[in-house]
Length: 342
Ligand SMILES: [Zn+2]
Image (cartoon, rainbow, N blue to C red; front, top):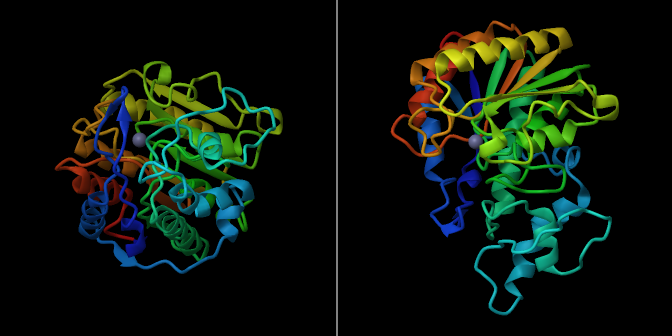
């Protein structure tokens, strides 16, 4: 299987992260890339550098206001006396009533959902290359490959059309799905990350052409808290095209695989032409977030089960944090999916 990754994706190196109000090292570290690359190589992937696709595929799912913010906010932030080294918001609108602040601080609060996505001088380029890896993987599948893997880092599934959050800036899975839509009438996105794919859900919430399905730790007591509940089913023409499967904390392989079968039933009924897998590996039992308890062989079974859908598939890396097994878990998923034979 082809895998896509560019060195520039490693430059984004966020320092800050508030967890329950306390400053902690940001878990979305560049070292994740080394572990994931090793995992992809062990699964027999060939690594290719993506092309520069310009802003087009990104602008297809994000607002121009937001992209302009992402590109320029770091420079603007540096002009503020006494500002932090990285862009971190400290005030957010409780509701969006149409007004848009002119100040960098106001816009940071408007466009950033939390403190987990600090923006440095390298963030914009890293996020763009991450998205371009997703574009190339989608194009590989459109050219006839049964599957391709995008080593997307920074990740993307918490990014809405105009809001960053949870380590995410550009929604790579949404970008891949939108690229697939050039030839596919219907695309399904299956998000198996520990956390609900709230940004992806938000981007496609009113659309019937992209089905969004997410399995995740129940947000009633887990990030992202305000999204990911079973009663969120889509809106307007998109009603019935969003499907959330919240799982009890510490659910292990059997419960995850059972929920996956429920997800498959919905995906089959949608009859998509192509599939995007938002592959978070943080549902792992040894992941620092500790929300679910999927084992390494469990990831292999998840990969195997998804492959049986028989759909052209773009696998987009989402979460999965530093632990000894991070690379092994990717290898397990890709090998289960059929990485050695494709
Ligand atoms: Zn996650």
